[in-house]
Image 1: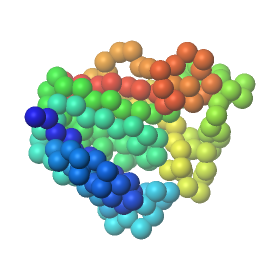
Image 2 (image 1 turned 180 degrees about the horizontal axis):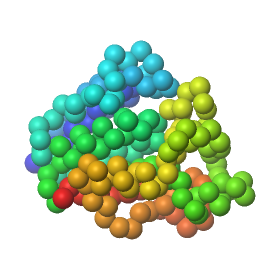
Image 3 (image 1 turned 135 degrees about the vertical axis):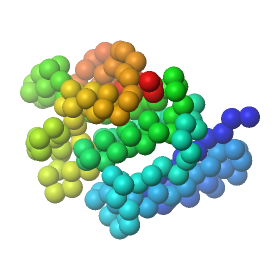
Length: 182
C-alpha cells in the first residue's frame, strides 16, 4: 500500500488534514513545519532556506508542491529544490507551480489581462506587495530553469502555462513545471 506524507506551515491546515483525512486514511500523514513566512506564518521559528525535509534520501516516488513557490523568496526556492532533489528517487517525477515571467506573460500583463499586479521588482522576481512579498511572487522563467538545473533536476517538457496572466489556453491557474531527478 502506498502512503502520503505532507507538511505545511499553517497549523490550521495541518490540523484539518489530520482530523479529516488521516482519521479515514491512516497511511496519510501530515505534520507542521514551523517555518517563518511573513504572510502565512509570521511567528514561525525556522527559516525555509535551512529547513531539512523530515524524510530520508530518495524516499519518494512522486513529490508535488502547489502554490508554494508562489509564496517563497529566491533563496528559499533554491533550498527547497535541493531538498526535493534529495528526497525524490531517481527517474521519478515532481510537479511544481509558479508564476513565470516570460515574453508572453509580460505582454499579457502590459495589456492589463493579468489577474495579479506584479509591479514591484526585486531582481529576478516581482511581487504584488513590497512590504509582504510572500503574498504572491512571480519569477523570471530563466531564473527558475537555472535553479532547477543547478539542483540536479531536469524539466520534462512542456511547461504548462497558467491563466494567471490572462492566457486563454491553459491547464491551471498557475504555471506547472514537471521535473525529474537525473
